[in-house]
Image (cartoon, rainbow, N blue to C red; front, side, top):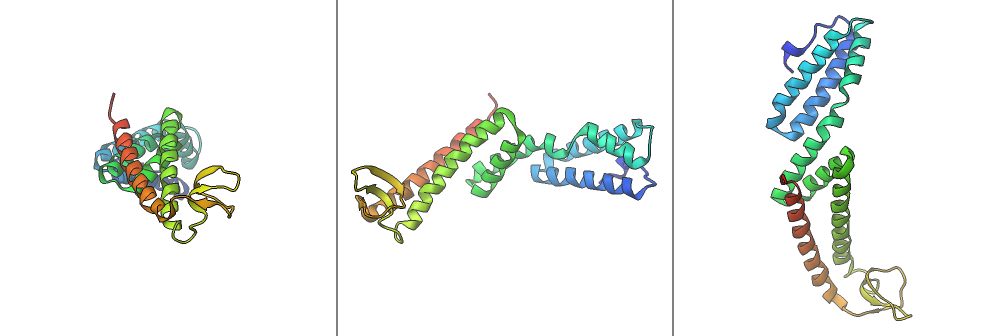
Length: 197
């Protein structure tokens, strides 16, 4: 924290409010990366200026009004954080980074949330195929390409027994191949969606 942008508070409540807000900025900026360090300094300076322009009330009240005007760091830094996490995740094919990036993209709202939600559904479908791959050896009659007693076909996980498994253990390499293909395609499309148009 740069002391140049820290007002000299006399009230402990105001100092705590400032420290909490600046810690939230620092936490978000640390996740975004070193390119955002200048942004953190700008935010501190803007908050200090906004506080200085307040003249009525106790320090903590004035600082709270300044914070309310500026907004929570998560609200305006979340889109940057989402982009950074998704970019790093897609470059490394890292599922945890991608999922965190999609989470922050959904929380940032608007068209970004819709696009992230669609990618999230794609990764959810991938998780279903992964579950099929793992569960097939243990629940062979309920996982795979199952023909029901009424002649209906279901590819997935079914709860009713009595159906006929048409693929047997061949569904394991099939679902594994689908998982790999879906993961690579979704991750590449997600990476491309970040490129400026």
